[in-house]
Amino acid sequence: ANLTTPKMTITLRKCYGLGGLAMLAGSTEAGLFNVGWPTSEYGGMNLEAGVKLGARSQLEKIEDLGERTRVYEEMVADAYERGNAFNAATVLESDDVIDPAETRQWILRLLDAVPNSEPIREGRRPYIDSW
Image 1 (cartoon, rainbow, N blue to C red):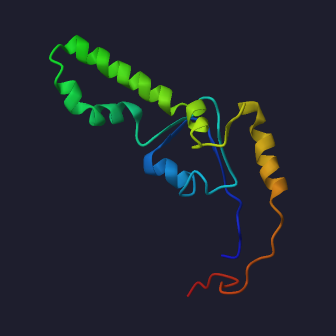
Image 2 (cartoon, rainbow, N blue to C red):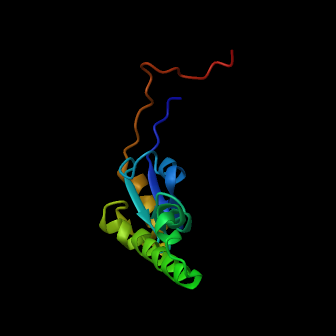
Image 3 (cartoon, helix red, strand yellow):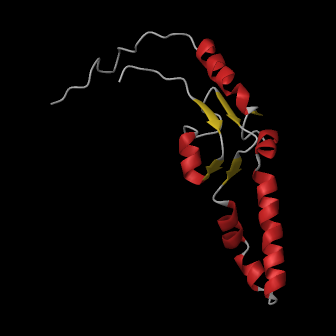
């Protein structure tokens, strides 16, 4: 109850929707840094499902099943291209794309950058009462 915790995000794979936003502490700007591995993906929802829902009427207009599949796959490929880690970094959804081998150094940088703070006593209880 009296602790303050520095927040950071290191995305390894997928960061989708409200679950991703919750893990980002509510915003891509909430933590001290938000970085991702080259394998990370960002999006409002699962990319295949997003294409199916977002382009449903457009895809239903295509009568040829083979052509519909081809257009769907192109749209999914485009969604993956837009949601990859490098594009997310260029539109400021993440601060940087890091080499996975540098992950430990990023965590240490955060811990070194944050000063040790005194516990906040005013307005908070020093313990949690069980009753």
